[in-house]
Length: 406
Image (cartoon, rainbow, N blue to C red; front, side):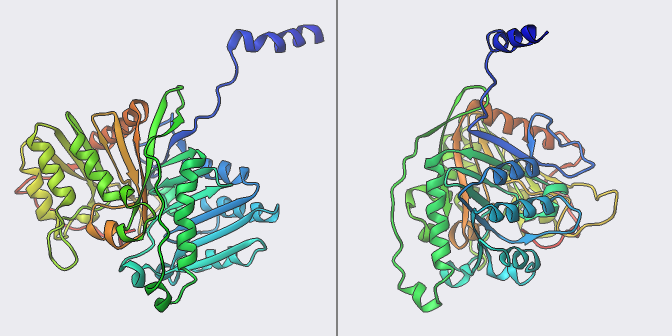
């Protein structure tokens, strides 16, 4: 019997082939419980976060808008994993938005009390006029997670979110430079920020990583705000508009919020005009915006877009949880766009001027038919779901209580 077992173990790799290596890039999702949006072939956020943090051996750098935990919910094991990483000697740095910290201090303070964990708060108001809105972390200077997911228990259970896990030293180094910049800025006084000399670097725009099917994804990271990034050529807005202007057949976009109006009432034209240019040259454009925009001034602009030939725009409304109302939840929070089913951008910015000019955000542009095709499928699942509501010129869209934008 032992000889048969040994023979099987020796022959198995020849019969079945070696175990497939983990892909260097993968899409990761969070799905609101009780909805039809789940994709069984895509791993859930909490599982991926636990796996990545569990692999940390030297460093773990976390930059988040805020951290909000609740006992017994899905973020609790993630924060425990961070605690465990620190306990085994991993150096942990946590950076959060200063203003959101005032609302969500408990979980951050609890982590900061642990040995090997240091926490800082950054106020992007005096720096660029906005907020620290990026959502990412870096493990051992090698593996990165970036996406729409806040470190919020609701983001793991009650919000539709999309992110990317990327195992690549070049990508990690680029995001690491931004983290180190923000870590330094968080320690400066306002008068010191005024005289701060921003370090400049030039990054390659053809980083190659292996996908799940052995295909190669060509990618480059993107950043905001424009005046506070090491390489201005990798500015989020520029990358997004270039992707849209390159579309020839189809363009799909999904954001929590969309507005071509600046805070002073001026028009923010970059993305709105790119949509119009695409439609004019015959590209079929579809865009999903969350119902958090209902009742806002953006509705008029969305109606205008919906009236343009080749453009369709829709709200999505995620039904309330069977267990009762949850504030700041039950919404599609994804931020991505797909061009021709071949290239895509995914990041942390909503479609408004402040995210690109005043606030810290990150993204990534990828050329991959396999991944772009999957994102297109995810888009269609929302588009064809019972939660979609097409926007028309004469439609009436009453606001629905959801809480503040995140």
